[in-house]
Amino acid sequence: MTFTTHTGNRGLVLEEKLIFEQGQAGRTGVDLPEPKGTKSRLGGLDRDSDVGLPGLSEPQVVRHFTRLSQKNFGIDSGFFPLGSCTMKHNPRINEKVARLPGLADLHPMQPESTVQGALELIDQCAHWLLVLTGMPAVAMSPAAGAQGELCGMMAIRAALDARGENRRRVLVPESAHGTNPATAAACGFTVDSIPATEDGRVDLAAFEAKLGDDVAGIMLTNPNTCGLFERDVRKIADLVHAAGGYFYCDGANFNAIVGRVRPADLGIDAMHINLHKTFSTPHGGGGPGSGPVVFSDALAPFAPIPYVVRTEDGFRLVETADENDGTKPFGRLKGFHGQMGMFIRALAYMKSHGSDGLRQASGDAVLNANYLLARLKDKLSVAYPGYCMHEALFDDGFLKDTGVSTLDLAKAIIDEGFHPMTMYFPLVVHGALLVEPTETETKESIDQFCDAVLSLVAKAQAGDAEFFKNAPYLTPRRRLDETAAARKPVLRWMPETA
Image (cartoon, rainbow, N blue to C red; front, side, top):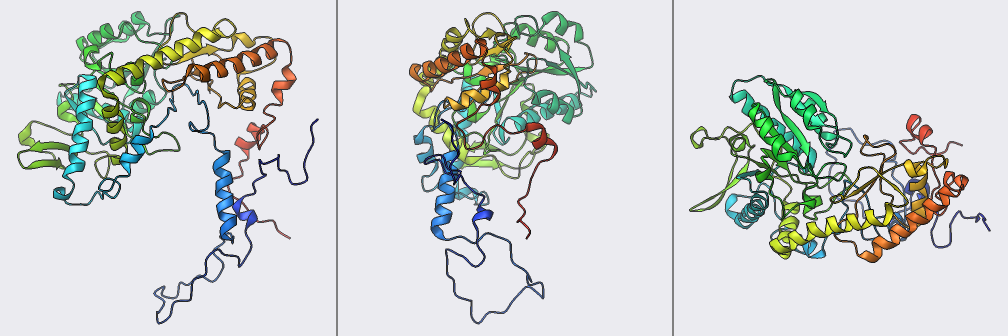
């Protein structure tokens, strides 16, 4: 029986009002005395009206934010199968290390002599990245993947300018991450798209046909956004180099091959690494991010400042370009060196796993994805034939003539207690469902997810479209009118007028 409660609460899932709606004028959880013997320094600009903040007691504040936290769905709550985003478990040892005295209280303006340990930690983290990629240089400062892409493409442009060549065309496969063409355009390049073959990889013939003396390079994601390894990657590198261009690789999916494939051996000139994907640092909410970029010998001189060097007297942070050392940095990307908290967490992850553990992690990620693919492929329609890498990609062919869309299925998955997979991405696959279990999930959790998906697919194919159109049923909020929300968003709470 469906019923509505007087309060709007659903058992212990409480109907949570906005904090402004709960506030009462004059109510407060603190009691501070008026300051005595002080003069105002506002120069006549004193506020003549209320601040407009809600007045609440201490229990109200604690309960409000506790209840909000319980409405969040995160990797600590359950299975988070977002494809291409890799919301993986963040080991608690990483968090403990990042909070150690001497690390947690660092300040970027401290003298170098007082942060030698921090500089050594950055140097060690950089060393691990260089060994794992086989590359000779790395820029640690970029803040997450998008800025890492920007860093790599700015280095490529600087290298071309140093050669006196006005190459401005960048080849971008359909299977690349969507930020790739945006980054190329932001750097002043013209984007030229390369189509994919029927098996989801770069069309080599189309790629060769587009090569010319105006090509600056290629931006290739490998493994690509379809969860597939580009098996012609070495030939692609050789061809673009022969044409005088550079090879930028989007390394967002490095977590599928770390410890097994070295990007340097593939002919890559620049590649960003998402520490939150491959090395478990926290992810989401706009940061904190970290996207170090590794460079080949051809691009290393153009890497940005600052960077850490080891000298006889200890570690030093190079903040300005030095013409005498043969480098020609294109500039700097950030006010300081990078996201120190992420370096700490990533290094803790790498050192706790060791090289053999990192190799196992990438292998387990691929194993889990292929197990999930095997469980679902008979009832869902697989986008491309064969094995996948770290994520499994399906199209919406299995929902044909059911009246149920990818979005409808995703909403129903929420009622089963799972965050939905990535939907409608990549755009080259109609009604895409991109699922990435990561290496941290057990067989039991993957089986539970697969069983739930299969039960919903059976329900959709049995003709119960109406059930899906009204899902989700058990969430604090039901399905929104997304068109109205986009066209008439309510961005600010306004008090009710009498």
